[in-house]
Image (cartoon, rainbow, N blue to C red; front, side, top):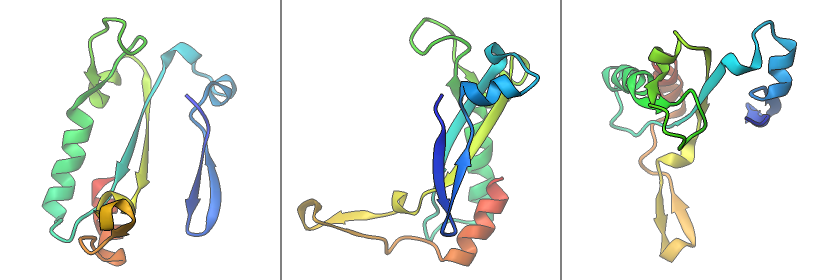
Length: 126
């Protein structure tokens, strides 16, 4: 885990996700786990699709109790709640809905949803 800094509405905010944050908490460091998810919505996105995407992310077997590749079984975020106190960091990332043009020299965002509807769908996803 590492610390991350995010630009949120023009302000830099620091988000903890490292051992330094665990030392300050009451939970031992070996009981921490987490998931970082980047999200963006296309113009075709709906409330129903946002809710289904959230359910899918929570139920996909993406986390392990050991080090990645050590033979540990992967578990979903929801399944890990019985083994640790999982943390979830959701990052809006507009450039996930884009097309690379001009042989990689430019990028277009025509498929993105509007800002207000994107915020509405982000809140449904939460």
